Amino acid sequence: MQASRARLFKEYKEVQREKSADPDIQLICDDSNIFKWTAVIKGPSETPFEGGVFQLAFSIPEQYPLLPPQVRFITKIFHPNVHFKTGEICLDILKNAWSPAWTLQSVCRAIIALMAHPEADSPLNCDSAMSHENVVAFMDSAPL
Image (cartoon, rainbow, N blue to C red; front, top):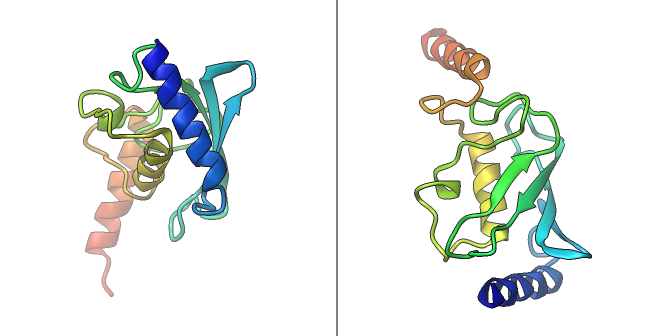
């Protein structure tokens, strides 16, 4: 647990130092618990989420960075890889592709990328995945 605290304090200092470096992500550590964070991310441009602001909740295990954080959307979002009731995110780096090289900041970057490029093959929100597939099929078949 001491290693995870040290890693989180290092990430906290980095976030404080680099606040203006990534204007699309704001990470906030809970004042009373280093293992609880929130993030505010901006919707990626040229997507239906552009102009939107989305809040994420991070719950970090004591074995971090050996285990990934649990991340969920607090803001409601209609997306194939986000469970519409719980906000759970289906993203490989939060499951089997996790590496201690990932940081909370880079996880936010990956979530923004997922928002821009849904993985309809592994949906948590089947209705959204079907809608996304229909839109893609329509766009592929529509004459230019």
